[in-house]
Length: 133
Image 1 (cartoon, helix red, strand yellow):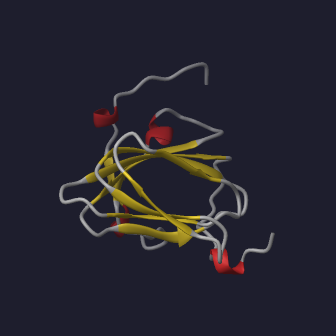
Image 2 (cartoon, one colour; image 1 turned 45 degrees about the horizontal axis):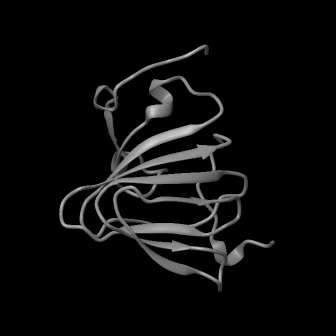
Image 3 (tube, one colour; image 1 turned 30 degrees about the vertical axis):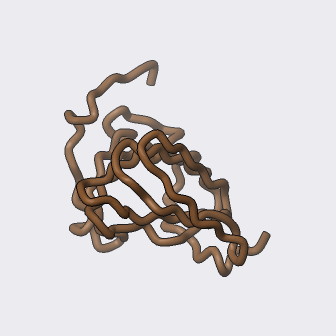
């Protein structure tokens, strides 16, 4: 790929609840797929009040998140060393491989987060309490 351009609203919404193998049950826009990215996963995630992505880790993937809309409560850090951080629009947070992370939407409308992960491995997530350093 030399380059690619799209508008977020032109990328179809995927309802993850329709895919049994992929929890959690959120709506996303698979931006990376629309741009034919090979080295990075990029998605926009939509959250209803109270929805969350549970505390988890990845064996190889580093992830970066950017809060576009709404208020979130983040759980970040290694098992036994987790911190809770409140985050609103403009907040950027990241977690490296084997580092626990998760977030819950605490706002009243729809929350929106841009998620970027590399390498783009199919890694459903690990229990951070079982990860060895």
